Length: 141
Image 1 (cartoon, helix red, strand yellow):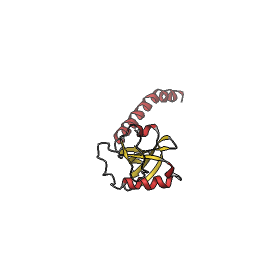
Image 2 (cartoon, helix red, strand yellow; image 1 turned 90 degrees about the vertical axis):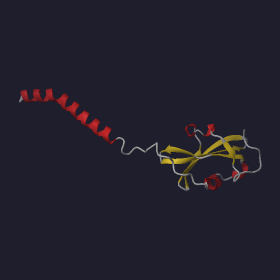
Image 3 (cartoon, one colour; image 1 turned 30 degrees about the horizontal axis):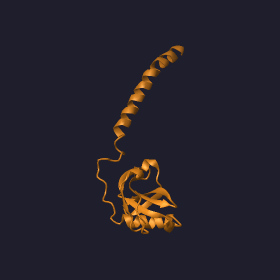
Image 4 (cartoon, helix red, strand yellow; image 1 turned 45 degrees about the vertical axis):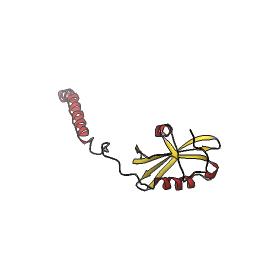
């Protein structure tokens, strides 16, 4: 009985190594199955994205008419926790303070919106006047 325990103890490290090797090989083989293809081209952005963004902003901000100089960036195809989606950055002045806002769109629907965070990259985007939210003031430079 003691001899069997020693024999089993001697085989244990080899069995663990073999098991780890099998698991690693299986995971490596399957790892590409669920990964999204970053090489696939993004779908066409809904040409109505400006209207969808304006509608969401009007519902998200109670007093949006008090904000000035709305500008919008072209949508960018990004990966989010909700999957691949279009990111639309909007900037404006809120009582003299510059703000960036992020809207996330899939197909023809805004699925999420929030104040932009650094990882959104909204600070680095080129902007154009957002005529659907315009109040006639000069754009931010």
